[in-house]
Image (tube, rainbow, N blue to C red; front, top):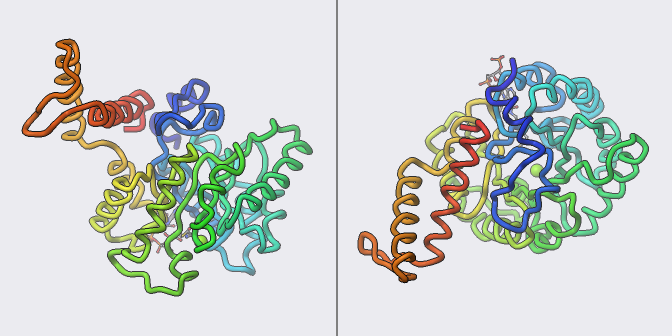
Length: 325
Ligand code: COA
Ligand code: MG
């Protein structure tokens, strides 16, 4: 079954406007969704789940060869994903395959199994430096050339999930035009730090903020860590609201139940849209009267407030135009 809005999405691919704010250039996102809110992991050794994914509507599919696949199943995951790609691609939802990390000894074979025109990019765990990205880029470059693909057509979403990765996150995000987004992974990060993973997640505060701010500075999109209590929908919603407030534009899902909650929460709410409309209208009226600031409901409205309001309206409009609501 094809996902709703897929034909509209295909049409949009060539005239995508990237709205996650300015420095993202459209070439880098040419083949991706206007909004990427939910990125669904599907364990690569599970043909049944890859089949199930065809009936689901995340904004991005993430067939996984890394943490959800036991070591003795890695070859099976490669084969299973490779043979699922044409069907998955026919749904019209972008595909980013997560491969094993650069020093695993597995990455080259993982990439060789899946780099073709069905996929939009690859995601790589535990990246620690700009050099890691350039090394991955070199492998991709060779595969693209051998396979007659456009150079740099395969994008990269690196995972920041070590202390070193957090320290170098801006360098990682800026290392190549292939990098269109960056992912924060809380489970591995806390393991690397040797700290407890708590319910309120305070131990990840600094790292999450660092990733989202560096992503913005580098002009790429930030995605937040999966929420592992997959049956706790209320907890997921609160975690998404928190991530959105830090500047993340989307979140990884590990279970079909999570997709809709993530998709909703990473869009402006009805009251946010109404408030933004009121602000823009009042500001435009004041501006035509020659005033650059005004009072609205006891709050000062000036240029940055209006810029935020216009950003909210832009995201809402793009969601509407793209059929992603
Ligand atoms: N993608 C596609 N389908 C999935 C899925 C996923 N990530 N997770 C569950 N499903 C399917 C199940 O196969 C089942 O299908 P069915 O109704 O046709 O039998 C249905 O959705 C309901 O699943 P459920 O029984 O509630 O969950 P489960 O116990 O089978 O699996 C997990 C729970 C957590 C093991 C599973 O969701 C999973 O493996 N998620 C991905 C984990 C991952 O990728 N981790 C790495 C990144 S951190
Ligand atoms: Mg990880």
